[in-house]
Length: 253
Image (cartoon, rainbow, N blue to C red; front, side, top):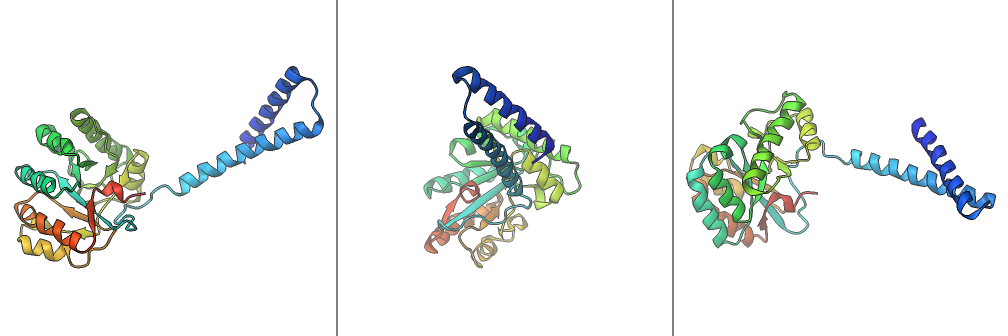
């Protein structure tokens, strides 16, 4: 225990004893000793809990989550492709599936109605930073600014404050992850990449998704024409394998 805490402990115990004396008169020595011990224990446990919380704080991005419930997360990074969002939202509604849309702030500035539509449909919103820049090597304050600016915009438009962050291009380092965590975010990447931005056809997307999907996996996609075509088969295929598509927040600690 730090010296300052010991001093505070002594002062606190003295105040406790004096207050007791004024209220009910002199107390037996054993009772006073017990009070000091209990107070010391409270300070000690506070320090232990604080250290546990710090030790358990995220240090690397989550590529997978809890698979115990049979869930598999779907995330869709949105920095372009807004013309495909209405079809994606309609398919997800028909299939009764909610996913996570990870929003780039710069995109959201000029596509507020599309952002509102995603939120109104009940999907989880994630933070993709404001500009589509690599976060490795960025100063911690710049990372926090990217997250805060986008979070403020998303809240302004939807009333929702996201607490999931996926760095642009999946680029991050230990320092940027720490900065994001300090900004109140759970940092995610993925374990299954559709690589749909290649626009090489629905069948290639399906091959990548169904290579070996497992409960707890995180699937990454984007709003593309090929993704729209593949999405119904992705959902049906996952369910046929006993996997329940869900927002990423449902499988994170």
